[in-house]
Image 1: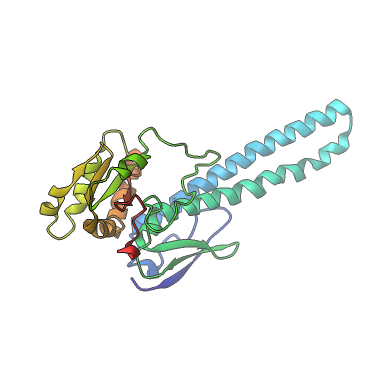
Image 2: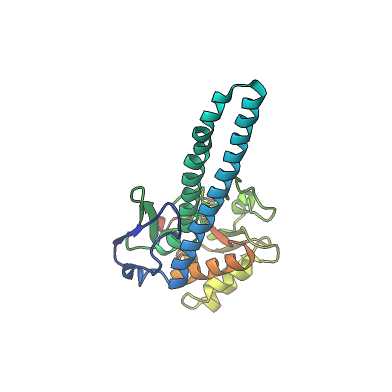
Length: 267
């Protein structure tokens, strides 16, 4: 995919972005992915508005009660000013989280990034090469993209913290960890599915060594190809579809034999 920049006009209220996918995104996004982006922004905007309204009602009620209790009716004149504060805070926060979610789940895995382009527009840019999934630990740190409105995502019971397992990796083997998955998902099964997309994958997958249900060891020489498959457009679409079905992101994290995060540039 060649480098490009697409400006997406947006509104403070109403549906985010044009109803139809811009032609410049024809080769980068499916229609379903583009509409999913619009739905995500709409959902977060609605949450922001509802939160702001609720806070405004509480503030107004407090001011009204205070005015009658003290007999100072001048307090009433400040109601509209104080009630406007939640809207100036909640809407920008909600849209910022929507942008982060879109980048993490749809655009970044395909080498694109959504950025602000002023108060009434966003822009989608591409450097022409696949970007790295935020949870894969390949070259970049995970952004705070998984914050729901007003709540920070807490570690799930099935989240992997495999420092000890990485230290036990056999010689010439790297480690692959499956995180944010359902309890029934097995790391070995997920990694084997990646092998089906690389050359001589069936034979090479026989060298996989299971460590735990969520952690497997693979030959270091296979890491680059596995990461490329994991960050491919097709795999990104499957992960988005999977997330929509059961809420599990099913992220893979790749590590060298020495336990450091695998980065393609180091190969």
